[in-house]
Image (cartoon, rainbow, N blue to C red):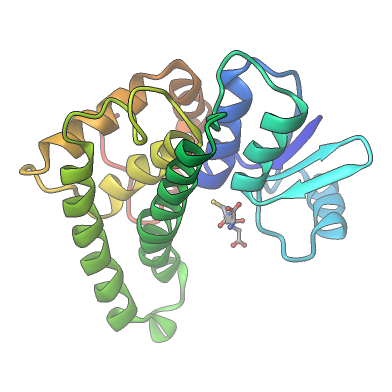
Length: 217
Ligand SMILES: N[C@@H](CCC(=O)N[C@@H](CS)C(=O)NCC(=O)O)C(=O)O
């Protein structure tokens, strides 16, 4: 297998977490600027140019969630990221959508806005995104009471989404101190060996963080 992505990209880290969970062999194709040939092949394969992208022989899978679903079906391992129980799987997929849409999506809005020329910035959109993050943190704090992982006591697809989402969201829009369950969950995610490996892989790129990476984590 080959994974196109960037070590500092949150959605790449989501897919990497799943690959590392089951110790799956793959080649990482780093979409960093010094690899123009990798960029060219990636753009040919996926004109939308959002990464990660997984290639497995003849098969190509885009979207981090779909990559994790694909790995679950075709390369299963001891870490079962989607529960066999169909109803529990609904919960996992629902929470995966929560982390992508309301935490990662909102934090990306703030970061991408910062990368725009001053005249093209969208303060209204940023303010909406920050409000959404506060609302999402508050909901998550209640949800995580008594939970070790997002969908209960087993690490899942939802936690692969949550790890980079909360890692970067806290840098972008600090999780209020009152949300103790969210802080504790984020700390657990950062200690999970699969995600800790992603954090280490992205560390050299921290100077690229447009809002300035904090001196922690
Ligand atoms: N819905 C996509 C989102 C992927 C995404 O937003 N990737 C970012 C990196 S974290 C990206 O490709 N950024 C490059 C760009 O927008 O040009 C997924 O779940 O994989």
